[in-house]
Amino acid sequence: MLLRNLIDGLDVEEIRGETDINIGNIAYDSRKAVKDSLFVCIEGTITDGHIYIQEAVENGASAVLIQKEVPVPQGITSVRIKDTRYGLAHVSSRFFDNPSKKLKLVGITGTKGKTTTTFMVKNILEAAGLKVGLIGTVMNLIGNEPVYAGRTTTPESYDLQSLFSDMVEKNTDCAVMEVSSQALKLNRVSCSDFDIGVFTNLYKDHISPLEHKDIDEYLFEKTRLFKMCKEGLVNVDDPNAGRVLKETKCKVYTYGVAQDCDIRAQNIVKHPDSVEFDVESRWAREHVKVGIPGLFSVYNALAAIGVCFLMGIDGKFIREGLERVKVPGRAEVVETNMDFTVMVDYAHTADSLQSILSTVRDFARGRVVCVFGCGGNKDRGRRFGMGEVSGNLADFTIITSDNPRSEDPAQIINDIETGIKKTKGKYIKIEDRREAIKYAI
Image (cartoon, rainbow, N blue to C red; front, side, top):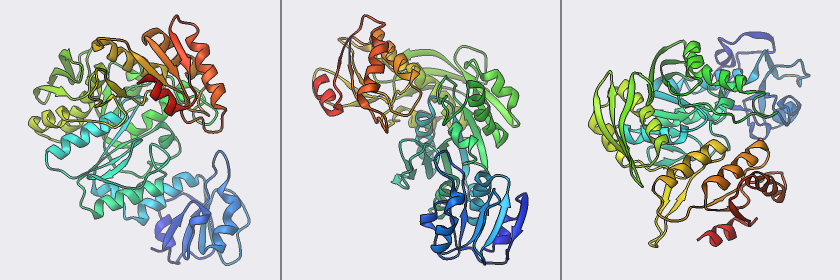
């Protein structure tokens, strides 16, 4: 594709060189630049792509997209714009011929519930005979085929558009994806054509120098999804729902349990391995059973039901899809053939840990033993809160290491211990995670 066609529609501040040149590849990592590449210089939190222009050119790049006035080697076309993160999304979408417009695209944002809700939507749509792509924290799938394992919940815009393109090539009907606040803030999902957006909830999380400065910014970034989609669904029971609804630019519907809304759950019955309830909505009435226990599963299922109602999916497929849904690492029961139950959950905040432990408490006949750790390079306050929650709700806690990144695992464990010491809960510290799990069993 010609460079001038790729940059058409961008607010260009300056062009130096020819734009009638063929671009055969786009790279935002100079090491991945090849012959006829457009190298997009991204200013990140750790390094700045502008300092790697020479390396990209040596690897074959023939043009660069920049946002700073920097020297560019002779004979190389430079295009300067205000924001190269948005620019990367723009040129990537055009490079792959706007693939998201060829899919029914659903985006789900919120602090909790994104992963489970995407799997629920996927299950229902597949029950209805559609081929579905999934993009999220646990994995990326086209149908049942795993593809492109990224390091973030929402891939960088070039990788995202490439994934959409692969889905289109493989005759995928719909794509359902997790949309993180960072993805919205950093324009990873810009130029994506969302049909439906979902807001699940908002809790105090992702507040740090590398993420969001405060809860207001965090919420603001979440609301950006509803300026990008055609229809929206909002959890009206969340305390922040009013602000989200105020910011929406699309037709929006609400779901919940406690308040009057467009899609509401009633007569909720909890079981050890599932939950069932009646659904009252403007579209239909249904009785559903969800194959994941807990009140949080009711909210996630309502979001998925709302998406599928908006897509015109028949109730029998909704019932079928929800009853057999299983999500890796989300209230996932591991068969042991022994007289105890093992459940794996991704809970990584105090609120999430309280939710899953409260759910377990609802049906546990014996002791509740909790094995957990906290990730490094994240909000340190999480550790104290999670320690306190486990101390209050578990009969016994095993504090261990969990992806310390660049931090000292022992220090993270000590922080968790500070929280648990506020309670009367019994605990032990075992840094080696494998040994901690073995001890628990």
